[in-house]
Image (cartoon, rainbow, N blue to C red; front, side, top):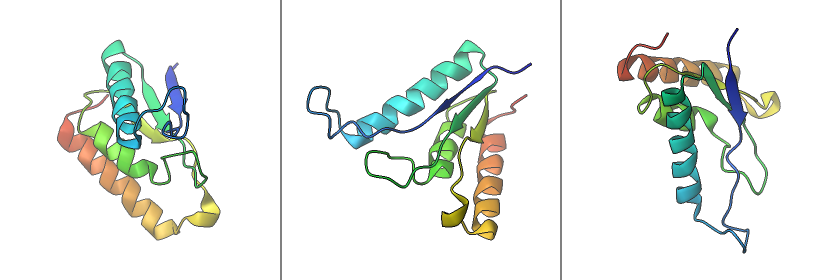
Length: 108
């Protein structure tokens, strides 16, 4: 059995009460992924959104950044919008993320 988390990258800059910059929101997401890795979770997935209010229209880039900062957690795409994806491009982005993940260190 594997235990993991799926997440989205919510934009917090439009929330007047708890506003943080988009860059800070993504930095906090990467910190949560690192924490999940250190805590021993097996997988962390990021969903893809192309709507106002979300920062994860390119989850493979977020996952690649996380791969460079983690040691063992498996990183995954939790949602892919097929109508917005070129199959070849999606394959190569996933392959590149996998290569970066292996370069950052072995994952079980």
